[in-house]
Length: 431
Image (cartoon, helix red, strand yellow):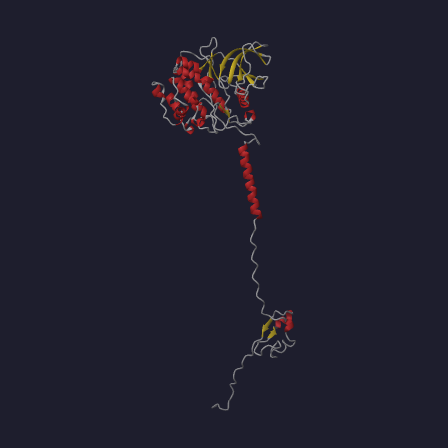
């Protein structure tokens, strides 16, 4: 019994003359990469040509990546980005992407054949790339795999120069959070290195998760360095030496590799290759203006089309109400819970009871019922309470209390005032 093929060895039965989805006939193999293969095909009904990209293995993550590449390429409606016509589903369930068929060669083949390019030629090739990548940045899309293999030079009859197309958004990072661009799942594993190592930024080498458009600025700096000098700014005998050269080793200035280049151009390359991404240019508008100036100064060949659109300033996507990322929603939820808990603790915490007022001293009065009936009439009748000492001052009713009928007007009886001695004649007086 034959053994079923594994996911690693699986490949669709692709051959010349095979019909895919009852619509496309495969003509020849165009190219092959780490993710899949690209075939030239002909539509059986319209007789139009197309390029179909197939996956090498039946892997769910690769399938999601190809579908996202198709969606991103369809979103970036730019004259220098490859056009995606359709997405097919094969018999085994794996997708295939139908793109426009491009005739020409990649920038990698051009550099391998001719070496370093003239400044005006390099400007004409890289200016459309900068325009396309800058437009993607304005949509919140980071390419993350810019290299000469992904820059295609389309040769057309009657054109004085090649038309440039940017390929392969398969590992593009989505930073937008609106509409269909918002990713639902992460297509990268923690610590995974995605991209060609020679063109990876230091933060991409370190595996940072917060990659932004500045990693593409670094890759464009490496690409411009290679196009103008014929060599890459970084190299090594193995992967470890390459990582050391990218992150630590001093970079040989472009002016030393190729003397006589315009100082503004070499300074721009040095700014793009800053290891600290905060020191790189904020966007690609400055590089676009510099390359456009060299294209306009070129008198040997006029471009077939006008200059590509200038990259728009990068704007952070505006979030729709209720469509905040999960991190902000979690932060708002935690903040709300803390606020509610604080309010509950303040409202229900035990409060100290106020101390009772001190007891009022008793009035030094005696109730009227305890007085003898003749207390007001006989001030000198002796003690007012039976059994009291004879020296106790009796209480008598003040005359005003009789009028108001209260017992609070009782006052102590005054002792009798001693009468002065009689100053009359005395028997012993000499008078």
